[in-house]
Image 1 (cartoon, rainbow, N blue to C red):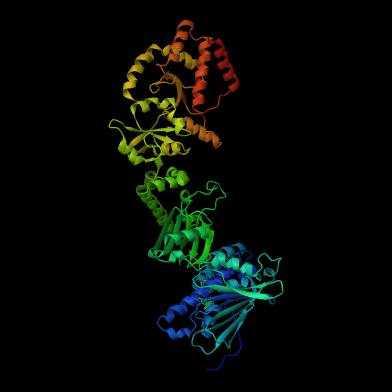
Image 2: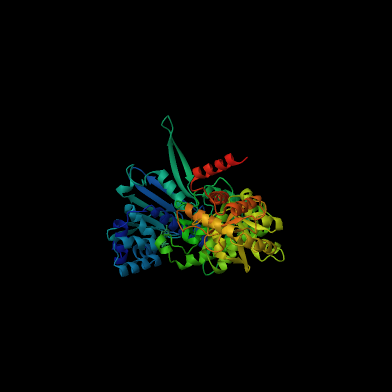
Length: 635
Ligand SMILES: Nc1ncnc2c1ncn2[C@@H]1O[C@H](COP(=O)(O)OP(=O)(O)OP(=O)(O)O)[C@@H](O)[C@H]1O
């Protein structure tokens, strides 16, 4: 075969269009050129490796698969070299000179349809890989030389991206491809946004985009010592350990832990690892971690939630929030699918069907694993719950149907029967007394606060289990659910408790003291909607409860904190008819009627009951004056 002379050829019109876009329309994210070229090099090595399985001579003794990077600082040339499959003359023309590749063709098709403006062009480049051509984003001349195995000669291809390229046969002894990028001025020197002539820059870019490429990516580093001697060090820039592609059985726990800590910058080991490889219509590997501790900003807007995306070990995107629902934002990890486009843009992600399928399965898997921990390892689950329980609850609050049911099964609460152990709703229901027909709950600050609440006295006496809600969101979730397993939730702090035996005594008393209660209610007009004798108090004198429906007082407090004014909860003042103070009130009323003193007592009772509910008095000075006056009067 006679060597082919230098030939000047024209790019296909379509190819030139893509090139023009690369050169003239893209001003951001140009660094991805390196990932594209490394991905091509890695693919080329994959190919030769695969073919050598049945034809080992193909390798011609060169089986140390490597990708080499180099910088010629004097001439501003960046080089990437691989010992992959290389290309023949025809292959170069076909692959590099024409737009034969599927990604690029789709890209052009869209481009023509859209009559792309500059912005559209950027979007489109984001959607379709345009691999090799991305070199022209950073270079004004690209020289490629390549040799396929068993070919006598190599091919040199060169272009400045201006409509033509040259191609010729040259000498090259080794198999593989070398690409030289003559860097554009804006990528050279200290002033440059990214200085591609700096080895550290290249090292960082490799770590960011190509850390898990299977083959070593090597580069020489030079150091001058004091005497002017230069030492040379060869560094492998990538870590090459894409743990997720290995089989689960081959991975030790320490390997997972190490990987997590390094990849996600956490000094603690993960609480749980979820590793799946799925080979089906949608093909992907997912490696997810539940951290031990919630980051301090997990609830703030600046929290970077989402998983990392890879495509065949190549980094595509960080913090892809589309892969998991918001309430699972604590999950760290990555998903690698060969079907993800390397240049997937966030906009395209919005309606990527495949991504939706993956995201659904991932959510299911995380919930399934949590259920398993809940059932088999309550200690571990409690640790998880104390960090992330609120998020699961928020999920239950925002979802419906089956998904909500699943999340509800994952909720645990402290209760009067098992405060430190915490109970699931299912366990609570299984422990319910025979004649108990509601699930009791109480909202409050903490265990001590709720256990000292006057409203709890009767339930404590009757030995009825009460769920403790210490999280602000709890009551909202329950309000939303209304019932569990067809059993209604009932707040200890709301309406009537309907505990039968107490009812009769009170009903009898109620008639006798009707007038007194009306007088107190008149005195508290605008503050309470009702004053009544209590069926729940045992030793305390008074308490406030909310009406059966609408806002509760604790919800009112939460909403106020969030600056969402939804009005006031209905307040009902309950007075304990068996308390000495009640006799005193009766005495006053019987002798003086609705006197100044009864008015003062009514105010005081209301203030004290409000204080117990955690509300600050409207006028603390007046309250203190009232109390001191009473103390002075007392003998
Ligand atoms: N280093 C290389 N070694 C061998 N062949 C290569 C190399 N780089 C590119 N090629 C060939 O050129 C073709 C075009 O590459 P390009 O990066 O433009 O697209 P692609 O890699 O096929 O697609 P995409 O970038 O969308 O994944 C490749 O399919 C491959 O055949």
